[in-house]
Structure formats: structure tokens, C-alpha cells
Image (cartoon, rainbow, N blue to C red; front, side):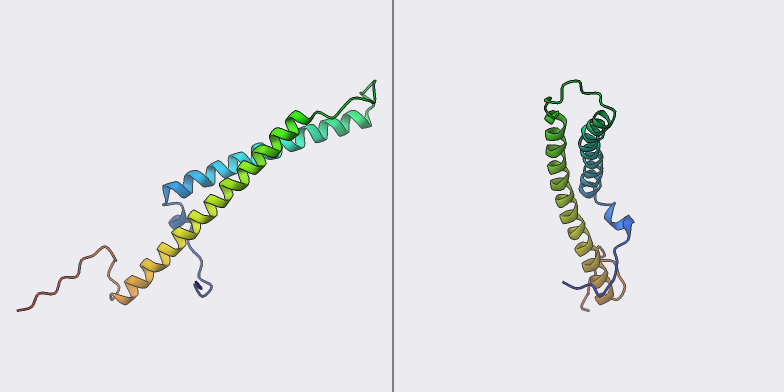
Length: 117
């Protein structure tokens, strides 16, 4: 479906409560995943450059990396749902605007009654 380069206003997207909720959850989980993945990576690099490890045979702390990877996967799924809800909201917006243009600029919620006399 082509909308001829028209964009959907943000106010239309965020009127949908489900889109608003999933968008915010996706933002929060993305930030959490970023912090859980970067925190052990940066601290391990700092430990290696400053020679903090007395025993070089120690293993990498995989608990935070595994948790970060799992939260990252969750975040991707929340973004997928948010994109699907945004697509639905944009289709509804453009369908309503096309209905208004066809019905002579009347809202799609208005009831047009024809009374035969």
C-alpha cells in the first residue's frame, strides 16, 4: 500500500494506547540491554588495561552478557510489535482521511441520513 510519500503525524501514532505502551517498553528495554551489554565489556577492558587481574586464567563474566543478550532479544520483539502497531495506526489514519475526502469532508463518525419525501 502506497501513501504517496505522506507521513503520519506523531500525535496520531501516540493516540493509540497500545502503541504508546509498547513504544515506551521498547525504549526502556533497549536502554537496559545497552547498559547490561556495555557494562561488563567496558569494565573487563579497564581491568585488562590496568592489570587488575592477578590470575590471567580467569574467565569472562558471562552472567551480565547473557542477561544483556536476553533483554536485547526482548527489546527487538517489543520494537517489532511497536512497528506493527504503528503500521496499523497509519493505515487507520489514511483510511479515515480517504473516507473524509470521499464523503465530502465529513467525519467518518458522522451518520449521513437520506430521507426520501
